[in-house]
Image (tube, rainbow, N blue to C red):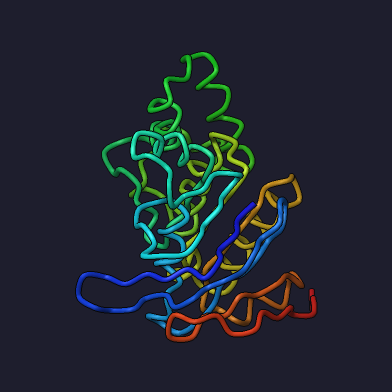
Length: 225
């Protein structure tokens, strides 16, 4: 589903953000990506979504060679990937419903189907009764749930999350991680970048650890809860 072969990323400033990364994430697998601040976690996710291009190497996602993918096909590539951010990136002047519907509107989904799928996504994250509210009226955990609903409303086969619990307390963090686990149980490939090592032991999933742009041997936590 996601494969990196000897991938390097050098920025114009000369910074080598990633150095020779090679790994593979199988279809329907849930994997955690961890490492210190500046280790290259966000850069790795940006290469998967083609926000950034790798300097060299081979990246294959969902059967597509990203190194040779034409610019005109990037929007179609991104429709197969849901992304959740630490800071939600919600539109505060739009309702919860409108925020979640945005990917479907961009894709040209018919209004009747759009409404059904938005409500289904909100139901999955426990926010069906708050579709007419605005983001600023919600708690931080609820805003993150809106971001997750928006990421999955297109039913993407791949879900990425960049420090999704970074601004949440431990109890809310567990709730958010449980949502990602639930989506993985429903055949979604999930990759979560996080520095919260205490959460990883709950799920017994493989962990990819970065250090200064290089991959340290992957390991798997034993499930504790």
